[in-house]
Image (cartoon, rainbow, N blue to C red; front, side, top):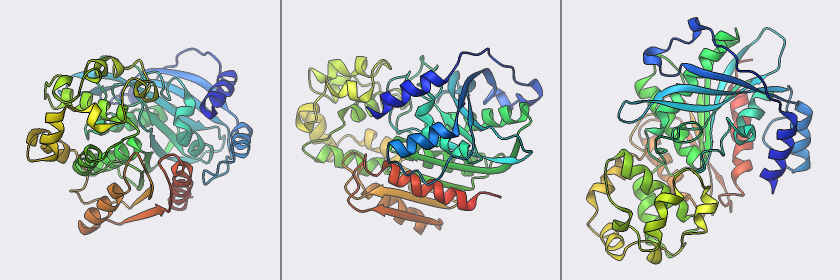
Length: 398
């Protein structure tokens, strides 16, 4: 209901506009990755609307909007896991400030979404955190992520570390946009995300520091309620009787089967009739909630008996190795990290954050875990964001 209300109100405040150009001198990223191919102004969100929204819905997001925000939809260049050039999309949120100031970049990664059109480049509120951060003096970036938005010819790398590559290219695109508009970049870069977005935020933090540290410097990141240990997460979900989000499981299968070239039919893993339904449910036309209606939450009924027995035993070693490879516990972050997670999270188990804290701290990380006692996956959302964004503002250059 809340999302419907917001979409309606924002839809009324936006207008159609002509596509704008980006200066060629600013759009010259290496190998074209991050080059902007399309830039469409969507309109302006007023600070009064944002303030009223927070009050009307009793939401504390850790900040008070100070500026109107201009929103742009972009299409940019990226690559897939085979190095093939692909299109990706996303939204950019710019504070409507007349003074000559420099801005940090905030990249907010959205939670699980399987419907390609439910993204910030089409529905700006999907990047709500980037919108609010722009209202207090950041340039906000909300990537649709590869496989969503305009990239309808490739699977989404769901809870797979390759997802971070298109996020990095989106940050390049934001920098190209800022250069073209003569918006000063203060050099700070903040990353955050919740649920899948928490995983994506941590994967991006890792990718930047390990592969692109000569190009970007992370100021801080706030991964929230993410499945950072895919080995633990997969085994735990398959060990319980009921799991409330079978669409997440289906999405993971589609992602790993394609990217890791497992080439296994759904019938290898799932029982009928779900095995036959999953490819169509995950084709980008349906949301996770819609997909869930055609699946089952009962693990013994969803999975094939042999697969379940093998995975919980000594079998399925290839798949287990893929999950281990895409876990995010074996690196040494340089920039500070704050994890946020509710203890009663029924979708992404709290132990993911405990394991990340223990492993990364042992690796030398400056990392903390903010525990939300009794918090579920949904009830911890704004509690986490309010503390994360407030923390970022203490680190922002004045």
